[in-house]
Length: 72
View 1: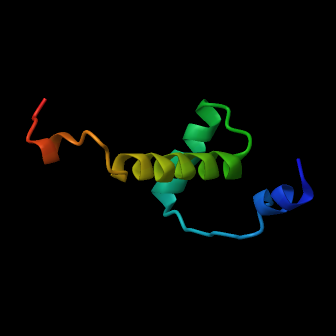
View 2: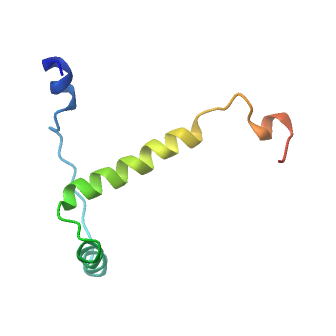
């Protein structure tokens, strides 16, 4: 991997958010139940999966059913 590409992929931006007590309890239980060791990685991958999935769903399709009047 080239140095330039490696630099582009380096994580250097911090994002913070807050949980209330019930959310944190649920998150901790989930991580314990499913043996999530790296919570930061889990959150990052979960968020990015949703973001990229939404981009895919929003992308115009050549055969968009609504534009063609097709309901199937």
